[in-house]
Image (cartoon, rainbow, N blue to C red; front, top):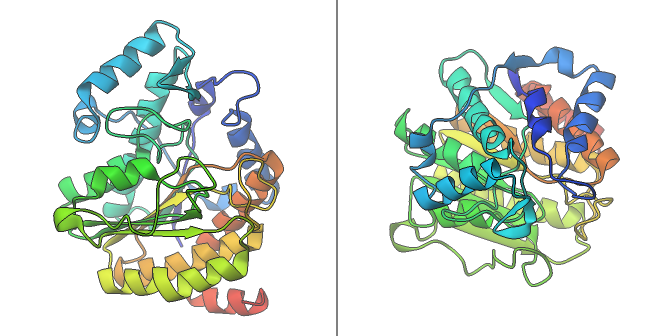
Length: 328
């Protein structure tokens, strides 16, 4: 598979300060592991570029964007909450992160690559229309979905968010739309930030039924995830028939992550990747973009990401063989 790769050293300039979980070392650990496993040489580099403010303002409130930009220029250390750390460079880096996903979209839609993995920061899926939340400044994956429906006139875009924390921002941005399906599988909101993503949250107005939340209890393991994918997520995707698949790829459901209580291993993320690749192959001409979200234990994050990227690189016809060898 022609797999694109988005990364830029400038993403490291988003300085969140000492002790912050969402730190530059996350990307350093990922790059080192991809190099050690000789995976990075199999990827096609995509040059990132900043997203335009006009495109950002399609989803984000102008007052928030101006406040974010000014807060960075003023050297403030946080915006909206103590979780959302910023520095002077953060606004420009957020524009670069979001724009790099759009560059990957263009490369796929122009048939330069089939799919892509975007190792970006700051992450995005908690960013709301008018505020930052949970380390996130701009909603990277939401901006990509909107770009696909606006620039390329796609009618059915699916977002599958398997970060352990519910993607509240992505859900709220699209909950009244029926052209973007948002599926979240996450630790139960009564036990974990941000406290949203209950089963009854299914969308509103014409978007009713195009939001799916699948919360799991703490200490759930691969058997729980597997059942949900087979009996809930895959049937919903088969019904929707997406023309493009977007993944909010958080690896903080790992058994070693310090910010959650789940029990997935690196090979489990490979299985999830394979399942979603099959959907993209069946309905979307393989068109899939994976965008990094959470994952805060450096070793675990690196291993889970490498497993994910390895699964992306496998041709679809080999996926079933990989699953058999892996005991799935």
